Length: 316
Figure (cartoon, rainbow, N blue to C red):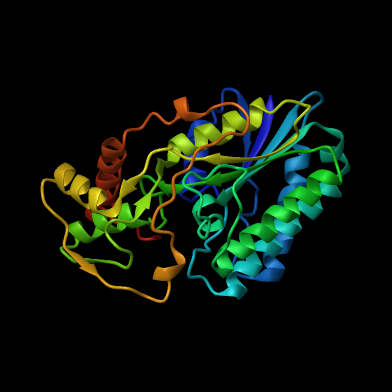
């Protein structure tokens, strides 16, 4: 049985990974002490303790998997916050590399990266894994540094590594967490009877992928990687684009009323690509795993935000 650790299990992608990994087929690990993200010393200590606990869960013949879905950074984050996330990842990889039990057992690490950030400046009509990475923000530069850590970690050992470059993620609010992104902001603003601010043109195109579909593809891609290809970078995207205007219209039809919109540019507006179309050409095709229609996913986000509005979690 696989022993699985999802780092960032309380977030949008992490909670989706938790739903998709069955406890019937995997031993899902939770550290005794949660990782402290707000203090560097405590963060390193709790990550190191988590690795030791995780190592002890292994039994003879078992495999281990670590999914990194952590991080609060975004395109407008300050460099210091982004650098702290890189240091946290570096701590985890260092502790794993130094653990004799984990080194001896077959293991895999999957890392959630950002396709939209890394290819923001790419001019290809359709972006694939062979397209040039063109970062435009501190966030995307730091993501590249994190990917480099994983590449070096793989080269120094035998652990399989998947870097999943994921398109625009959306889904229901994770328990106790704020939901981010255009769709969630639209849903929340409608419930609060407030306008939502949009700082990109309404014809801006994005590839929206439902969180559970992305999680399912991430798991399946990692587990299907052959021994002859133990390192992989793969784009996880629905491979269909939708404009911001279409999202606004669609959420209005699902909710039976239209959201109020305020448009206006910010300092970040120019950092976002007007149109990015993704297609994966690496490894097995995962398009069949993206089963959730956009209007279905939007309805689930609306319901999640409605429930949160009616019965707010005091911890959120």
